[in-house]
Amino acid sequence: MALETTPLNRYPDSYYAASAADRLRERPTLQGALDADVCVVGAGFAGLYTALRLAEAGKKVVMLEAARVGWGASGRNGGQAILGFSCDMPPIEAQLGRDEAMEIWKLVRGAALEIRQRIAQHQIDCDWRDGHLWTAVLPRRVKLLTDWQEEASQHWGYSGLQLIDKPQLRDWVDSPRYQAALYDPEAGHLHPLKYVLGLTAAAERLGVSIYEQSAAISHQSQGDRVVITTAQGSVRCDTLVLAANVYLGDFDRDRSRRILPVGTFMVATEPLGERGAKLVPSGACVTDNQFVLDYFRLSQDGRLLFGGGCTYLGGMPRDIKAAMRPALEKVFPQLKGVQLDYGWGGLIDCTLRRTPDFGRRGNVYWAQGFSGHGVIPTCVAGRVLAEAILGDDTQLKRFEKLSNPPFPGGRLLAGPMEAAGKFFYRMRDLF
Image (cartoon, rainbow, N blue to C red):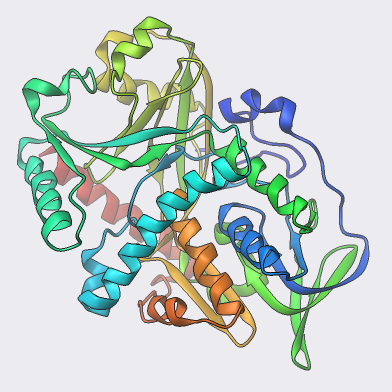
């Protein structure tokens, strides 16, 4: 395994960066002292959604990004906008009760709609397509699909899910691996880096100042304000928003102790033409319901974008293409030997219970813990944090009731302990 080596001043060598190359431009490094209403640390989805809402309300917002806009998970992910959180809804309901959990579910569905609205409003060319298929590999796990369809309809008021049984499945995804699937029309998929760059442009048009190569080093209170220091400058503000997730590090150790960096990987095939269209005739994005899942979709230019695998030990395979090929060919044996043009990886920010970690301490707010399931939940986070900063903390109070304890064992042991747990569940899937 190799640690990530991508320099902070350029994007990783992914399909996304290559296909959005004409849209990439550098932004200035912060020099000197600035004053703002709000400073957001981290220019990914969560930070941008928060900044957009605050700017729309007339706030003066400064964003600090240690690398490039969308350099982390926001610009590298699977691009799948799936309803819900990584933990699903039952753990949230168990902690909050049905009524408050229902309000959070409404936020999720509202965020799925908001993404479509922002794409239209800001004319973001990001290859959006509707639809998600949740598939079962094991016969015994078909029940997870039917249970969720029934629960969504009867318990959460969502009747849009369509069950697809084995005889019909080849019309949706042409793989012998799956037993059944559940289709969600309110979900969808997009080119994440193009989308994050579109949100960035929208934020800048509203007056948000974004500084790249400007890592936030420390912060301290000055009266009722906060001062954030970078290598060559500082920002003095009324409110600080932490949206750096797994890259927060020592800037706020208490928050960092609640998340574990987990590596995950993707590949992109050569353009497949008609052969690609036959793989996923529905055009939907696809995930399975194994504990260590595979996920994939077709790109606009006909490539299969295939992801999966993970490591809790902070590293990446030295040859991502070789590491991912067996899983891809297991799902699609008809692609045996296909050329893989791109392979890349990145880190996701997992909480111990996979529940989202949104909160505040004085005038410092944060959103993290998306646990590999962030395209829609980051949009939820932006609304929740912005509303609280603007004076309505109703939704934030709900999320603050979710328990997200630090990982046991600290930084040294958390990864190996999670890896051991993952091995157990992987064996359970297999046997």
